Image (tube, rainbow, N blue to C red; front, side, top):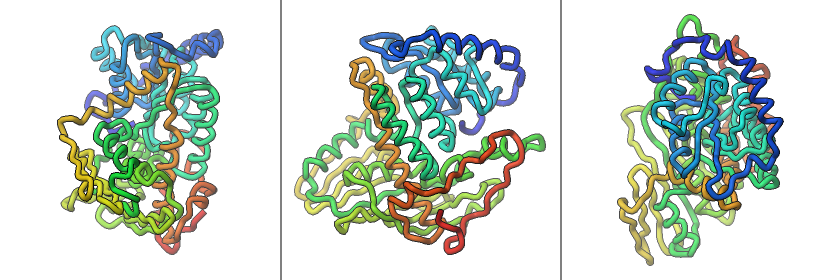
Length: 434
């Protein structure tokens, strides 16, 4: 779920009410009558897409999935908010044409919308809700035996990452395909760059740097009718239980590149950060800047920075330092270059559109009978970001094992549209490491 556009404004809030009960009963019957083998596709067999979370990213992923090959259709839509479901229903019906097969009986809203989508005959599920819900949705989708495209990150805390690792193992046993929204792993420039790194063209990688420094993002003003929960859901970026903070929600891309280049995960993180410029209450309780030193073992370190503050230097890039050269990469600038003994630079015009390619790769892998499963990689990169946040929030060094085995479960015990106090802003030296 992302910020509402004008087309998402509240319209008919009873859009789903009259059909919800009948629709759930009918879709449950479809699911119960389908053999497990019906979830698998070979050749050009039909892939039936269901989306859970139809904000801007979810809607874009639907269009990209339906454009990833022949005989791919949208059959189900789910989101927290009814007006958004209705708005995206009308929008996608126009843009997808005959690839749009959803009906009002296969549209769902509320906290249990994912259950409705999973009970339809969809066999290809897009998960694009706020990350705090991702572990729950991943486990349920894998249990239902359906292929998955999941946005990143896949969790906001250690318990959530553990759930994702269990989902990865179960999906592997079932032969399910899972692609993640770490699209750099499907981008020509990054693939070419990493091939050279792993072939030894910059020598032994001894250090790295990565950045996602930009200005402020959007927020939705609170109205008198919004409960605490609704306000937080509509401003999900600014609450750690929903986004993981921007080091997790956004900077995970760059950290994923570093892990990819290092071919390992960090052992330890020490960081600092704070909330200095974006202090207004409508920005929730997250930080606006982080800086983390990640230790990868064998004396190898990575320096990570991310910031969301206006009128400051902007930089979204990565750098791997080797004994024979240095690799510079930037998705925003489409820069891929090695300086040193084995000089190389890729022409930006040779780069591809990775947001589309990740869906093409997933579809082709499913239809070839060799489904890819990227969930473990993205779970590890998510945990990398989480351990950095934990260190910055507490002022303590955090090991990989501490982050993975943390007991800090951020998901509220009760999911309902009511009261939900905003946690205090973390203070290093006072906030407890759980």
